Image (cartoon, rainbow, N blue to C red; front, top):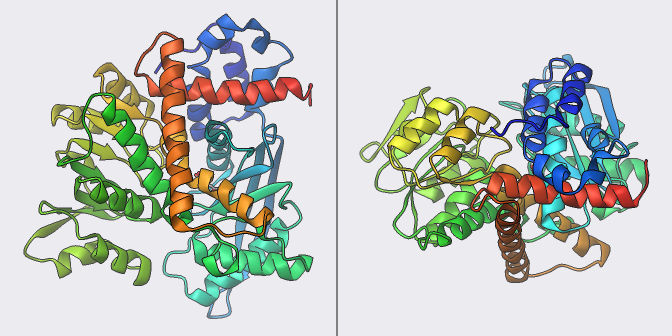
Length: 449
Ligand code: GLU
């Protein structure tokens, strides 16, 4: 990882002091601050008016109690969060994550990343993130609904079409967004469709939103491959995860001629050298809501399930970590490099550790960082907001075309910025600088607020 410039070092030291113990947040801040030394050298005014300090400090952090009742009548308390990180470019925008690992530091890292990611889309959206340490695994539909209603009963005070627009993330899909929207509508007595994105198609959702993060990530990697005169055709690909991002990353890769040989969940991974049967993965994960090990039970002859272990041991040309933060370590990166990987695209948020990113950059591997590569989801959320504001509904083709143009635009912006700052092909630097400059310009224009 690039060392932090000595002028910026004291700002980072203050972030560490003020946010003690929030390791994921430190990691996300370090990555951005480690990239902007050259920007500050070129534009010293960015060091004025505590601009960088303000960018590292969320505008608002909300923590609340979420009481809920399970099917047996027992009461539970979860903790809810919403971090409204930055609204210089538009209303706060970012997903909601339900996972037992959720804490304030994780939501802050996600909100910080989201701010720059959203800036890269070029659309008018600020950054935010929310969630809860509620574990939705094995919960009934009724329990999920009651939890979402309780969560929104508090969250509704803080969100709105012009204020803060949540969406899904890990553990939150169209079902949960539907329950939250229903409760918002009931409490506020307003059909304010633009308050949430990732909605179902029947009540104001956008076509291609479900597919967008995965399709966008594959499109970004395709753009990177093209810079080396190649593409996905006949490439062997490993995609970690089997949630929404992973499934639609695989779908796009298949349509571009690639072959996906492995995917995973938090228990283990499956390998199918003949090519993963995506319809079966969808059936298991989207409909039955079961574990990925079921795949190997159904496809006994051709596939195998590995309990635990690391999916990054499976040799491939392209790796797309699409599960969760810090899932791909330096050791995994070195294994992938040894096995001949040519490109890595981050579908999840911050899935590669700093050590892994350094290894890929040093080896000259094409590396698409999350805030650029996975921006297609939130970009399509912004398109959903556009459709809601104009009371319109676009076709799948129209929406997918916009998504694809946005992803090509993000790729080109990152590549041009890396060139401009003297590191051709360094998408990490390009994404961090381009995102930072957009947020910084807007914040300067708005005064010290
Ligand atoms: N959770 C997604 C992300 O990490 C999407 C957020 C949104 O659509 O607002 O970007």
